[in-house]
Image 1 (tube, one colour):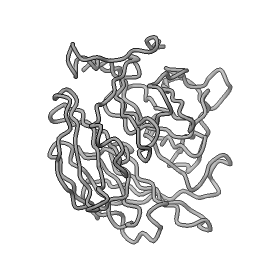
Image 2 (image 1 turned 135 degrees about the vertical axis):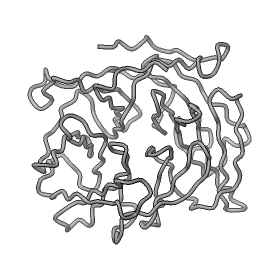
Image 3 (image 1 turned 180 degrees about the vertical axis):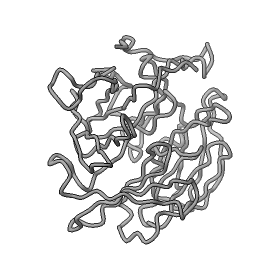
Image 4 (image 1 turned 90 degrees about the vertical axis):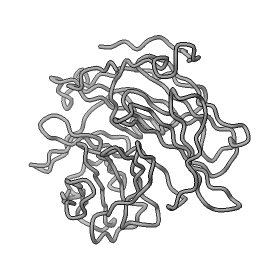
Length: 328
């Protein structure tokens, strides 16, 4: 698989109204001073499949997009390599397109080198979640993994650590659920001890290949906690960093603090509301990172020139609706 150098981190940006772009944070740019020194947008105008789409996940150069909503009957799922400007639609069984509720996940196995789309359906008449998996390049069929014993009303999220996809259930704050991408099994991990925060406020992320949990205790609290699982699966390895609320930028929303990645000099790139900022743990200071794009959501992205036809086969039909991205 041909990848670009990981020397410069990249971010996939969404503006909240269905438009997306890719951002490259090049070394040597002074992101904090002047309009001419802003990070480079690799794709100033991200042309995606028709309709309003949202990001399901980003893995090893490919992204998975959902057209409309998982709660809309006639939705569609797409796989794209944004750098090569190509995508294809994942086939859904006609009788299952209108199944409601349904949620999707996207992941990549470092062992088998396979990309997988997850589809979790809750059958209304039995109220038991059923998991199906579509493996890219292995036919065009969904495999039924069967019924799974875990909470039903959740989103898979985009947090991949230690070969597993992670998420939290909105009614539990004492555990984190994970899907082993290679073994295709679901289990749970311990959350940080003593959390009193409602689970829908907690934010789970992958930062520096560690599970990371942002805990904004309450609107009256003077600080926000960021927990790190230093040793995967070990409850005692959770460690806590504290951010003082009065150190936040005015543009930040304290209830929407999303760590993205660790970049230059150990700083943590954080997104909140429509703002990106770099957090310096040693000085506990935030400095705004100026970009040319509106930001509603942001996630790390690994650039790749891996062709969809290489995965799916030379005879597989992919769509190219816009010119190739210019790499700066």
